[in-house]
Image (cartoon, rainbow, N blue to C red):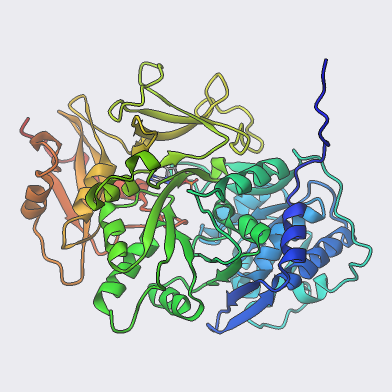
Length: 547
Ligand code: ADP
């Protein structure tokens, strides 16, 4: 039998740090501190400090596979954890600082985290769950400039060790490097554990041309938190390619982000739609004061991206690419761009393409499975659950290796998202299985309806949910936030929707809200809306949609 003659060197994220640190020592890392001032580090600092962290962790008794939790905002020290913890053979576990303290405690104890690295300004949050999670050592990053006092260890003193004899921990490419719990939008959080191999392959894949396509002359501002799905994998790609990183720290209000844009002029920004929705209001209201850097590209995903938003950002000079993925997928699955065979499309149709979830990433398999269990054709009409398989996709959860709700019998990840795929290979997410609205035996896409509502000039945000109905099983209810000066009645919005939807699909009820509740990762929290309106709806008489 012939054997490959190639070297069997394990894939390793240490190779990314080595490349970034040694070839691009002058690339910058800009972090915004709690007092809003900026601090600058070079990749040479990242290299030295991440290895210092690794050496210090090893010296503190970290064993291979031990979990080191982080409870931090986006900044240089958190980036050092991304590389320093795995360099010592540990597993970085990013805790989501927006969750309720009980839940953070539950997650840290479920993951059996041994050490914690925490921002000084987040110590009050840590105090709220410290009884639930027993960390052996708590290392405090003086992000806000506080003096670190016993029993805590100061991060700066901790990492200031001699690294002249430092050696990366030996590892296999399937050894774990990081773990992340799903944000629990639809249930109890579950732990996804990434490996050197999955992370390197995802990094190479995500930075292909037509995807991020980032080069050393780019500068990237991740508004997506470093505790959410590894910040979408962008820190790994930026370090590998020597790309300037701009971290907003805790300042994610649109005013603050726009000031940071003006000061540091990123060429690429990433985040969930809700962040950019509120920024848009400011850009529209204050063109004299706020402006985007020229030709900025944005990756927006994690939740449906309204076409109206893509159009609006183009007016402000930025191109939004829509991406779809999930924690279990490292997280990138698809990205929208215009394939060569569609270059002839006019501007209008291009917007439609960018509003789709886009084209599947390389090095993964994707299929749509219909209600009958059969695979759906790629005809742009047949709707099925998206299932995926590949080297950067989870095959189980931490301590829950078999979850038939999430994995098919033949080993594919069941994403719980419902979509169509067209002949050009563009995925269009129509819903989450749990958000689907089934009325009188037929499905209504909440995503389509939200998109159309958000195209109305008076509407700032909209979320459409199912409420129970004795006659039709479920009926749609639209929760709408109007713009500051926007005026629209339920009848006007119904008339607007009827341009696109047939009568029986139109919501019977509109609720006008001040804001739509958000999950810990900034997505519309439909579970909360359903809880709020379902109980009330159950007491109401059956609706009478005209069919
Ligand atoms: P959670 O499941 O807790 O929200 P994730 O952040 O991993 O955690 O979210 C993944 C889910 O977010 C996907 O399964 C999908 O439902 C939704 N999602 C991500 N990107 C998009 C998108 N572009 N359009 C619609 N939904 C999206």
